[in-house]
Amino acid sequence: MGTERRVTWEELYEMEIVRQARRWNVVRDVDTIEGINRRMRYGGYRGVIRDADNAYDATIWQAAGAIAQARDRVRLAIVAGPSSSGKTTTTLKLCRALRTMGLDLRLLALDNYFWNLSDQPQDEFGDYNFETPDALDRALINRNIRELLEGRETVTPVYNFKTGRREAEGVPMRLEPGRLLVVEGLHAFHGEMTEGVPPESQFRIYIEAICQLKDGGGDFVPWTDIRLLRRMVRDNLHRNYTPLRTVGHWHYVRAAEKAHIVPFIRETDVVVNGYLPYELPVHKKYLYGSLKEAVGHFGNADGREDALRRATRCLRYLEEVDALEDDSVIPPTSLLREFIGGSAYEGEA
Image 1: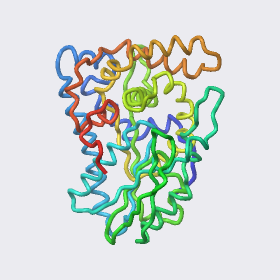
Image 2 (image 1 turned 180 degrees about the vertical axis):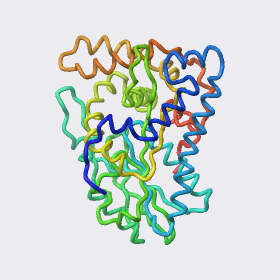
Image 3 (image 1 turned 45 degrees about the vertical axis):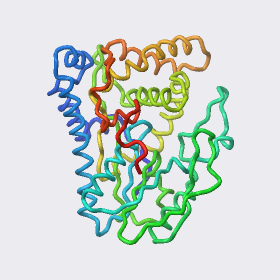
């Protein structure tokens, strides 16, 4: 599906979905951190949660409808996007919508195709770069996808994230006639993954946190910073990774997504905006203290200028926004629950 041409920020900001996001935020006074604080202090915050979730869900249902209408040719639906964009929740919501529309499907998650962590090289800080396509067994992904689409039984791997290794036994899987295959993963659009699969039989969904939010200085908050905040929360709460480690690792994430993920945004059938205008106050609750510690740590560490810059910038956003101490107002069906826990989709496949 084309070459991996670098997409510039100027091109991204001219996309219609970005302009729509900007207008949506302005109308609801959540286009600035100051505006978010006003909605929290003087009313309307719950309305922002409801409207944002409805808008996000509506896009997913539109994508499901487009797949259903093209079911005579589409056999493979792919959901991809950069780290912490909300791929898992988006995929599971898509599967629910497709099943509601009467489609039978099987889900294949590419997170199970990582090479063993012991086989990955470490950098001078003891970190691993598992963000690139090279960290995945692309040949096995392609073989499994092709065998499934051909109606043959295949054995898919199971990756244990606690041990950093694949389990000895895989899982037999077959795609029955008439079933749709849904594939979700960071690099699911990479050419080698679907080599030999006709492009016309694929439907591609790209998910990104299209954050059209300005800070106190009038600058737009980078989309990648929102995703970094999400990943820090999730890593700390659910993966035994401190915010310090996540920030220090993020340069690998950013390099890989600019080279291998973002270029595909113009080669997709649907772009889903997964940014939630109500999420920054929640991130403050979970991260403010840890980010202050990270800034202090990286300020005294040689070779960590990138991490210091990112941590300092994210800390500034959290200093400007009011914290939401009681996050029970966040519904279990919210994409944000993928990161803070309590999702209605946990354990679903």
